[in-house]
Image (cartoon, rainbow, N blue to C red; front, top):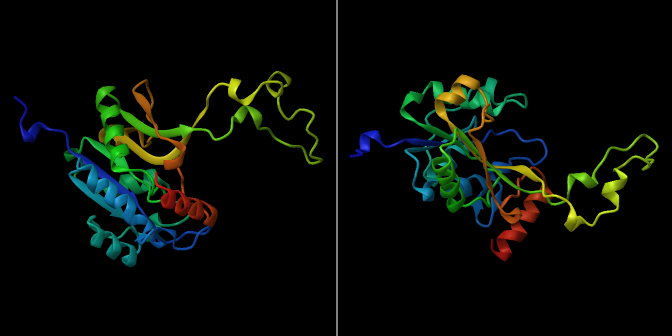
Length: 236
């Protein structure tokens, strides 16, 4: 018989530093009456699968908004981990080091710049993790345009070798499907994350969770934000 003590415990981490060069204060920018970060906090809470939903930030203002929305902010992120050079792995490892990581079977990394990712997406991604007995699950979506129709240009912009001849004679619908990371969901075995120091674990137990393009907007620029506003207004 399975008891509550033996059930897996999952933790969600939402990274939200104050600095943002391309879109100033983007994590607090208001999107449909809520700060951008609130949409991710609310989705994580609604998923109802996490023992804790924690925001990692260096900003007291962001921390205040996060707590009001229902997330934990146990401490502010040190300045050394809030620079442009700080990596998600460094931030995740530092946070786990203070939280007795052995308590949590998985770490789910939810970037606030993906406000259209839903609670249902989070639950479905975790179901994939469970069903596939995975070590990590990462969200993707189909590429908007085939990368086979992309290439590099020389300084004079000559397109002679831009794409292969066998490709430029095909219709787009006849090309194979390609998928890209959408930045919305990263689920990783906590122990293996600490061991390998990566969200992309080695081995054959890493799987994709596919999301539709309309829920895969990753906000880095004002154009991304405007597009998200449009999708919100139309329903997603």
